[in-house]
Image 1: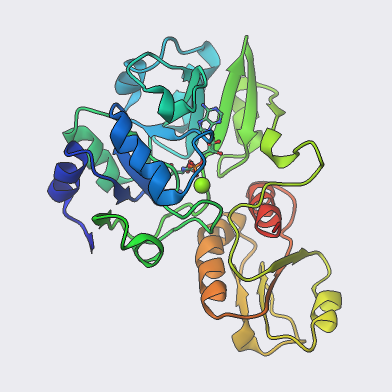
Image 2: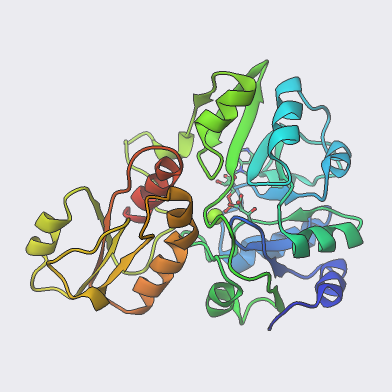
Length: 315
Ligand code: TXA
Ligand code: MG
C-alpha cells in the first residue's frame, strides 16, 4: 500500500516491520536499526547478501553522536556543510548498532536524509532507521513510491510516498583513515565539492574493481544495457533488434523518437541524475531487446551517473 500516513509508518516500524521511505536520493527500505530481527527482514526482502552492510539514517547530528564512538574533525566539517543531505559517512559504531547492520565491520555508514516526511518520521521514533535502496538486490533503484510498489508490493506493508526523489542517485560515501578522508562511492556530492571544504581526498571504489578486473553488476535493468560513447555504431549494429535509446540531451536521427528518452534538454547533469532511474525503469518496462545508453560527460555528477551506468551494463 502507498500513502502519506506517517503515524501508520511509525506503528509498523515500532512493531519491527519494514517500510519504504522517501529520501532526496532514492527510496529506502527501512527498519529499526537497533532491532536485529527487523533488520534481517530487509536482507530477506531485497535478497541482499548478508555481507553487504546497510546505511543507518538519523534525524540529526545529536542522534548520530549516540551511535558512534567518535567523530573526526573532517567528518564534523562535512556534516556541517552537507547535512541534512546526500552524504553518508563511515564512523566507528557503538554496540547499540547490531553487527548485522554493518555486516560485522567496525564502522557504521550513517546519513541524515534531506526529506521532510522522513525527517518528521525520524523525529517521532526513538530509534534510527537502517535502510538500503528499496529495490531487489542488483536491480534499478527506485525514485518514486510507484517504482517501489511495482517491485516489492507483496513483500512490504507500506510505502511512505514523498513524491519523486529530488536528487535521483545515491549519496556520496566518505570514510576516514587516521586523518585522511576517502570517497568510497561517488554520488550527488562531487569530489570537487568535498575538496572545497576539507582539501584533497582520494577515491577508493573497491567494489568497482574486483580481482578479475570486472565490475559488480548493480543498478541493472532486466533488459541488457549497452553503454557507449558511439551510439551510431551500436544502433547500426543492432539494426535488426528492437532497441530503446537513452541520451543526455539530444535525440538521434537513427531511431524513431518514441524509442528514445533524453535525460534532460539542457546541459544540467543534476537534472539528468534526477531523471536517470525513472528513465531506466520506463525503458525496462517496454521490453526492448536492448537498452542503449550514451555515456554522459565525465565531469561533476556525470562521473557518478556513468559509474551507475557502467555497473548497470554488467551482467
Ligand atoms: O542515497 C543513499 O545512500 C540510499 C538512501 C536510501 O539513503 N541508500 C543506499 O543504500 O544507497 P544501499 O544499501 O543501496 O547502498 C549502501 C552502500 C553499499 O554499497 C554498502 O556496501 C555501503 O554503502 N556501506 C554500507 N555500510 C558500509 C560500511 N560500514 N563500510 C563500507 N561500506 C558500507
Ligand atoms: Mg542500492
